[in-house]
Amino acid sequence: MNICFFLISGGWGGAENVVYSLAKFMEKKGYNISIILNNETYPYFKDLGNVNLYNVGPMFDYEKLLKANFGISIPHFFPELGIFSKRLRLFLGPLLKHLNYRKIRENVLETINRINPDIIHFHNPIVLEFYSYIYRELKAPKIYTGHVKDYYIPFRNQPIIKEIKLKKLMESFSHVTAVSEYVKRKLMTKNIRFSKEIRVINNGIYISDFHNVEGEPLSKNFNICFAGGTKEDKGGDIVIKSIEILQNSGLDFHLYITKEVQKNHKYRNLVKNLGLENKVTFLGFLPSGRYFSLLKSMDVFVMPTKIEGFPMLYLEAMALGIPIISTPAGGTAELVKHKRNGLYVERNPGDVAEKILYLYKNSELRREISKNNIQDVKNFDWNNIVNQYIDLYRSLMVGLDIN
Image (cartoon, rainbow, N blue to C red; front, top):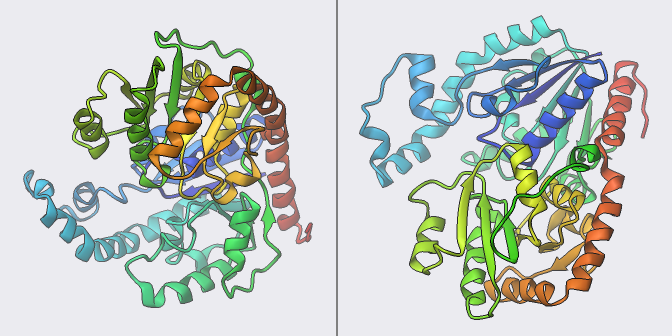
């Protein structure tokens, strides 16, 4: 089977992790895998060995986009003009994206023709913008996987035509899947005539990757992980403020923040202004092996998220037996059960601090949660998840309905 994944993204996250893992494990099963992606995401996939990667160029870096596709160089000072630069993006961004999509359209279609896929599988809602320029030309069955926010990201600067466009695009897919029942319900709130009933296929992890993970030696006796980077929906500022509250608890603790956080980002400034430099460490983006080693050494994983589809970060924490503190937002409640896999929390620093302290004082509960997590996560092994997608692909190739 010749499978082509199509992903447009600004960086690493849940949807990107899913595409990476599906490609990795489908290739191991002997399938021919290709991924079409953009310049900003391409580096994260370069280690995929026998998977064919096709880079369509920059999509979000307007300076590089103009240089690569139109031969226009912006003076070095121009992107650093602060508020003016933001206004430029607001007003010229949609136009630049439109011109870019038209510019690369033929090359992308030629690439797809060379791949000659049996299935084209689209991920991440932003891909729908470009999909609108090519979908009429695609002959192979087309699948779209809804992760989260599918009706908020694409066409955000075109609210009048947004619903009409999205309805038409979603109805053009041979099948639409969702990573959770929550995402399925969100997709079904729109007046869309899906070609088939939406099928829920959860995200997964490869359990054996976690069997022999060795933790990093850390100096503090209670270690906290926040892996949301700068995504505001994940609640990084809430976690940092909870650390200030915990300073007077007598708890010997340390917070580790992963994913890129720029030098002058407000989270770093918040840590400095609250005098927390000796309590918080920014680690940047970590390769999966290093991240798992760090995670293994954590006492708790904290993510007071605003919305989630089906969070892979939580699956990884569960696989290593780490208790989770999170809101029950979106698809989280389908994965994390209160006092079984962790604790539910309100999105405010006081409640986050209270729940961290509660788990610290209840070591027996932490041990019980750890056992539960290692057991419960077995339901989400990629071997099972990948087979569900393969069954779906095959059904579409022969025109069957497996709902």
